[in-house]
Amino acid sequence: KDSKAPIEIRQSTVQAIGMLAPACTSVTQSDIEKTLERVAEDGKDIQEKNFCAISLAYVGAGSPEGSPVRAAAIEFLMKSTTKGSTHLRPWAGLALGVMSFQMDAAKSGLLPEVAQETVLAQFKKERDQANKSAFAISLGLMKYLKAEKDLAEEMKKSRDEELRGYCAVSLGLMGAREHREYISEMVTESKRQPVLLQQAAVALGLMNDHQVVTTLIELLNPPEGAQLAVLSAAATAIGFIGDHRSVSPLVELLGNARDFTPLGRAFAAVALGLVADKEQLPWNTKISVGINYR
Image (tube, rainbow, N blue to C red; front, side, top):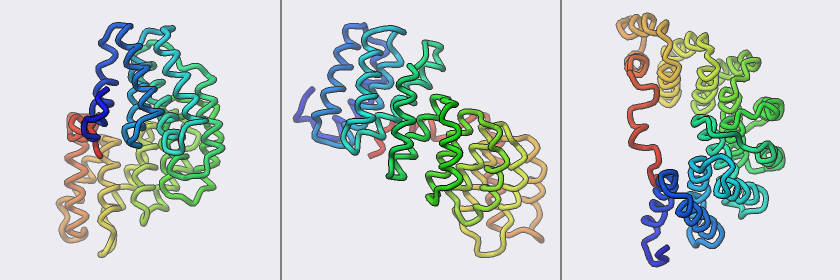
């Protein structure tokens, strides 16, 4: 509440208070929720206001089902998704997806369908590709299957590499396996588009489709002069999917200095490390989750 605190401190406290709120009393949760709403609307720093939306998702998900705090958080985020400032709208829409995902994980109720419909309507209406990507991921986190058709259409018709990738990930989060064939083609055709390559492969991993690993391993042995980013994306995707059947061909690739480039072999080693890692997510996830990356 100290308006004179350095902005970096304020951004971080906004994030922290959202994480701490679920452990508080209902009275304190209500005070936190109202404070976050006030800062989201009247704050001076754009990122501080954006972080408020995500913290409200934590507050809402951590409050009991049917509580006034959860209802107020959902109502505010819905209003901000459609009528908030240009900067806040995608964050509010994404926050509804985060809240839905956390509620589902904790088995503490479901997000009202009207909130899901709000995000879908904004996804269809939005023209900015980055903002549209945020709404796409939100729909995936919600597992809102009524959005599947719109996501698939956007994935196929858009010329924006990142939006197509995020639509694919969203479909992966929903488990919409009927789109596996098209997304597999995206992987094959993305040899010069590392962002799309990795997102499409992650989508297939979320769908438990491990056949793409063969294609990804082939990408680790490109002709000389291949993009470093493509090799990195392929190795990371193999590691995310984590299929045990990738180990033998990766070991073979790593040991074959005659037929494979040094860089390709190096990234085969990276992929092997990621596949064998006991953690499901990258090593730095525990450090980076919830960080004030600004």
